[in-house]
Amino acid sequence: MPTDSHARAARLDALFGAPAFAVAFAVLCNCLWGSAFPFIKLGYRLFAIDSADTASILCFAGVRFMLGSVLVLLASLLLEGRLPALPRGRVLAECCALGLWQTTAQYAFYYSAVALLTGAFGGILNSTQSFLGVILAHFLYRADRMTSAKAAGCVIGFAGVLVATIGNHGGGSGWGIFCMMAATVIFTSSGPWNKSVTKKADSFMVCCLNLGVGGAALLAIGLLMGGSLAPQSPLGIPVLLYLAFVSGAGYVLWALLMKNNPVSRISVFGLVNPVVNVLLSALLNGEPLFEWQYLAALALVCAGIWLVNRRGKEAA
Image (cartoon, rainbow, N blue to C red; front, side, top):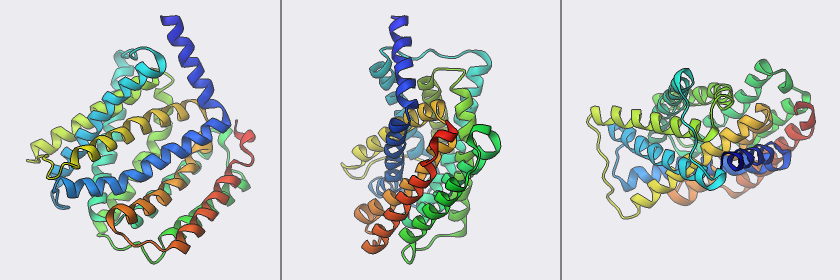
């Protein structure tokens, strides 16, 4: 059984390290994450959570991520045929610390921002993680040096994000803007750390501890602050389960991508995130959507992605 499990893990690493599959999984991952913002706002309505009720917002986030950690364990059984091994000592402590940073800290800010910003405006702010990721990779990894193609791709892609939200970003409080930017910085800084930790422990267990420990901390803080969680509509539970799937599947995909690829190869696909965000915000939450802007944004984002990956072999 151990031999079979190691063979499955090796096949997963080879699959996620193949450029074509890495691109496909990165796009899928960001589509899932792009759907999270509008579904969270929908969840707030279905659970009757007011934008000022920070305690219940943290409870909502905590339950979502704890459910996501369970899905990660199921994914390990399905893909590797076993439960992931629990790390020990300093590695276990590092995994838990990563969860408190990447899940608890990031999403305490992120969920507060969702309550205070429209989907389109939040999407454009959140999209800066793509460019911060490429810039950070340039300074931390020699294999991920910035090139003219990557720089041009980032500029064109960000122009697409601007077009997607121009005239339709709505409003948001200064605190909401601060929270979203803080969440974006935490997410970007977590990438290299996550990549490092997955080299010391099983990727699935890193994801499970990340979501489980981080989610438990969010729930505990929310409960201590007097928060509660009770669906006011039958649709509340399916929405929460979908968000748990997004977090579980998204983190598994992202951890495997980070483990087997240069950071800059996959970080730019965060450009897909705000496009999906804007579209679903219009469909689910009635936010305005101008068709010409959406089509123009898609064209620019695709051009940016192509430019960034045109010379992908240089970073391999």
